[in-house]
Amino acid sequence: MGLGGAVGGGRFVAFTGGNAQDAPLLRVIDLGSGRLAFAERPADHGYEHRFKAPTSQVVRVRASDGGTVPAQPFLPAAKGPYPALVYVHGGPSRQMFPAFHFGTYYANDYALNRRLAELGYVVFSVNYRSGVGYGRAFREAPKRGWRGAPEYADVLGAGRWLAGRNDVDCKRIGIWGGSYGGLLTAQALARNSDPFAAGVAVHGVFDWSWPSPIPGHLNPNTFFGVGEADKPLAFRSSPLGGLEGWKSPVLLFSGERDMNVDVLETVDLHQKLRAKGVAVRTVLVPG
Image (cartoon, rainbow, N blue to C red; front, side, top):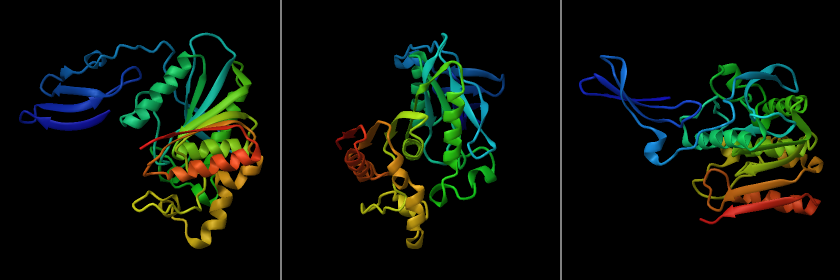
């Protein structure tokens, strides 16, 4: 939930509150009685869907380089084996929860992961190194990002965790994510097309060394602190640095005027994959 403000002489507090079933909506609590004085419902906005698949729980998964990281599996209600997906959030300074996120972007991703579980996918949402909520050492993991991308070891560990489950078809494990999650999706397909059989990368960063020329753009090169002397290492740590190993098909998706990640990152990757003979489809949203 996210806190709001106090009204009525401090007697009432308004805040947004959600749970595993419903996205965050307005709540007003009476501090005198401790009871809710007002609570929006999804039905107030014309939304009636109730998820049939069970809620997720927090587990820990072993990274491919040792240690463990937190994650949340979304499981279908019936018996498998199922196709499966690793989900990787963006940021990277974010954290996913076993409930609706307070941010709209990640609330949508949470809802989609739950819907995918209803449709018969095991979805594994991994809170990889360099995210928030687990302490400074986790957030500022050594060699993170363009310096060597150790957070990818957490993603690979999640893929291997799925491959070891009896309810998962180990030949049908995919991966998806947006922004930094799109970057890690591309890392998986470039570095480990086995076990990752396919992926969806939404407005991803694919080359840490490339400076976007768009004025005011959230430039991966400068945003992550890549200097001129750092560019060779940054490129080697990027998905494009492992392109020779990329075999799995991928869907690329970006907005034509995305101001966080230059759409040319997506166009460039598409062209390079086509030249390699990799199955790639790209969707660009105009405007």
